[in-house]
Amino acid sequence: MRTPSDPPLPSWTVGGITVHRIDETPLPPSTGPWLLPDATPQVVAGQDWLRPHFAGEDGILHLDSHSFAFAVDGLRVLVDTGIGNGKERANPAWHNLRTDFPERLAAAGFPPDSVDLVVLTHLHADHVGWNTRKADDEWVPMFPGARYLTARAEREFWASYDMEEARRQMFRDSVIPVERAGLLDLVDVPAEGARITPSLRLVPTPGHTPGHVAVELSSQGETALITGDCVHHPVQLAHPALGACVDIDPEQSATTRGEVLASLADTDTLLLGTHFAPPTAGHVVAHGDTYRLRPVPPT
Ligand SMILES: [Zn+2]
Image 1: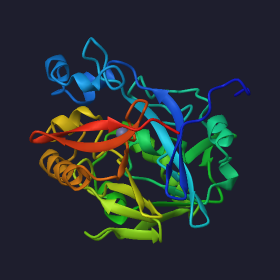
Image 2 (image 1 turned 90 degrees about the vertical axis):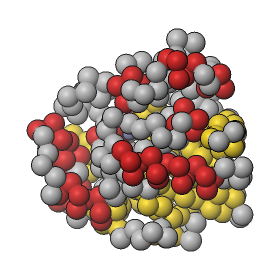
Image 3 (image 1 turned 180 degrees about the horizontal axis):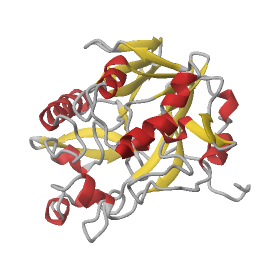
């Protein structure tokens, strides 16, 4: 449990909204070479601005798992739910975790029973894990008072996908219990985005998965964008075509990333990276033909 001497929980303000980062776990050093195989040590070495926060001197990428929580338009919202505890996973970095994520969520002022809305950027194992928790040997919704939202295109894609057993397991323990409880809402996300509340919009960002959405927050003239996995790591700002090994449509993923970064470049929009290591957030600035992240530390 946290004690009064712990450092303050990280958060950023976007107009009248306070966005909290809820840490789950740093991902192990083997994650970068697996996830972003083209981000070689040479590629990383060419971007000195990535060090020390986003990469080590050894060229290893720093990647984290965390969620974002905020209150907006009368709703208490969580964006993505990480890997989860006690889940049987093929990836050893995700297998049978025992983190204090629920305690961190509560410490930020979001005990599970208080959450109204859970936005799932896409249905991958490291974004849906805390959808559920184990109770009497059964996986039950972690946020029983919440509506869970994902894009209709995302759910329908996986419904007709020929899943390997590991992925079936993930749906069984983290998606289907929420559906069975009647808590999952499928949202149609047109090209112009889907407005959920006046300040909260889902932005279609397909490629990593077909129904992937980024999450835009706007308040009092200020804007932020939560990436989900349309950008995994700041090195992709310098190399927008650099994709993840798990992108369903690599070409579409690169196109989407290029469009998102171009739309953010040299604006005041705060980019909040779903897998970005601390300081996690920043502004996209043009640099030559591509971009860099100018970090914005938590307040
Ligand atoms: Zn991810």
